[in-house]
Image (cartoon, rainbow, N blue to C red):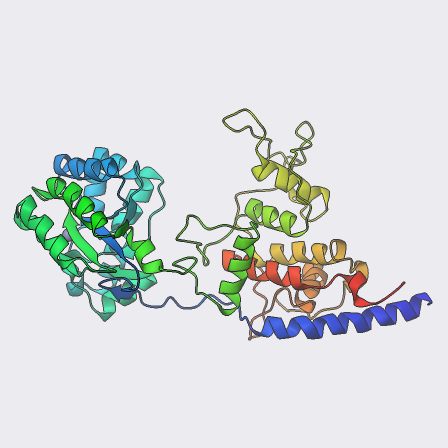
Length: 441
Ligand SMILES: [Zn+2]
């Protein structure tokens, strides 16, 4: 076969690949959806014997510490709904809340009745507790809000969704412990009303709650209940609370997590709409390309000034970010740039844009899947993509690895999300190798 015949066949085979991947690509319009209102819940699934103990009102340090101590002693997971003004005002209690396996969720900035606030008031109050908590401790919080007094309505749920909250969490077992009720009264109320999926309302600063907690824990466990956080209760059998099971995005995330290429922040949250750093993307791509090796190489000869090799606590070299970024650079998947002093930098903690992702994918299609340089001018062009990047975006779009928007734009400088990276990674896995297309050359 001469070169021009070979090239013609190459074009035909590209069309065949495109036809296959176009079907896949059509299934997913990667677009940031307008945030849906948070879902208001009073309990979890009735199918499993699980109960969530929840605690509000972190304003009395002595009483709250006694409750935390009781929970730690009995190794009981629980969800704490914190109020921002107290988080900031009682730092020793905040530090204690951060040291434990407690789930930290929101109870507003200053504990108002949310149903009486304006839209701008709602946006300020909702998330004030978790925002303050993370600012002071660095601890990741859960996108759950307990409205003060349990007062909620459609506007509160909408504002909660707007601020990134998934659930407005009320309760279906109210201990009324804040009235000063005795430990006996609290314990009896919970044990008498216990049922699958219950959410129990208690208060860190109530007088007798710390005495009631160990007896409630023992009583519920002896009745066969598992005590869980609210996130775990609401998640049920789903993989993550913040991803939809099934569908192209949920399936892609599931595949990558199963393959060990991406992981959630913890067992409950994946963060699909969060951005992803350039270093994290390099790690995903190196694993996709099958380029990662256990050994950390090139520590004496690093490529990027801003990605030095680092040692772990035991003195051994850490793979992330250094080794992954080096492997990506060695394979030509990432290049970084030169700073104004002529040093080569990678900017590992800067968020990845769609354009940067397209360029990496184009290189991977050429180098890893073997499509070579001839794929360069293959795909569609987008008016909003800079001229020198059009070939790469054309390859990424032509192979259906990334798609443009319905208005004909590519939006190159929009940040790529973790969900988008999962989706394009799966498309890349499913892209046949050029050598498997039945073409000899
Ligand atoms: Zn409260």
